[in-house]
Image (cartoon, rainbow, N blue to C red; front, side, top):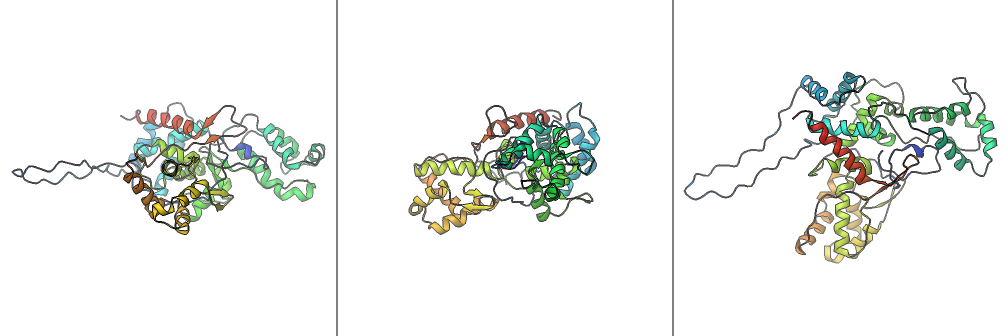
Length: 401
């Protein structure tokens, strides 16, 4: 399951994005790392009696930073029993945390472990059942109205490994194999006289099913990749080390104030800050009296283009109550994929209006998104995904009381 995306069925392997939503992917945003993943509240003490000396409240307890060696020992204890090459998984996970400057902690390690278990069951390049049929169905849809007989005849020509392209498609097992095949086909389409554009359709991959687009943006914004890289970023995503590095960055390397880790898991599936934005949408719906989707997208997206949304129209109708112009509302909504949105006038005034009206106004909520993919055969949602991962997370925490 991956990063939220409105998967285009015109590309053969859109098919392959595990548990992706049907929404169009918003622009990838890479934020600086959080100072800590666990918010520790400071208790509010009652004022002392006049006869009692004033004693300042205790400072919040901040976990001591641990060394890399201690981190490896902790991560090793948290990994589940029975996985192959435990030391390799442990070392590459700890290396990712160090390079991303994410503090070593039980909570952080368990969050990553829970997502890995859910997405790949500890397989660096997980097998996808029925993959050849999915790819052929996508090719047929893309090629229409050209008869598939002509397409398959073109794909009978030998590929670089000696097998025909058709034989390779018929034996596909993993997303990495699909990605490599279409990388080759994209350069050979003219020679093969193929009637379809053969751009690489694979959008996600690796043990955490991270988006290739996210990985490319991450490396541009945070160029601290800890391994020598000879090939493309796409190729690194399909390795264990790269899949862990980019997946952990997507999960943890951005600041939030969520009360529970499950909202990060929802964001991992639906997009960064989706849980915060879904709560905002629900509040706008109550204040405006309009039925709004709480999918975590405050704008509508067509590719990388942000367009006005029903949420924006509802806010514009409330403009006089908020004391904001249409331009000011549109300006602040463009911050929706950043931590800074919570500091905008729009965000503050919406919650201030809720306070005036005596409305309970949570700052986090589960995005309501149905997950659709050829790999999904039953009704699943982002809330289901977050719940499953959160259960694995809590099990992991119990391994080190």
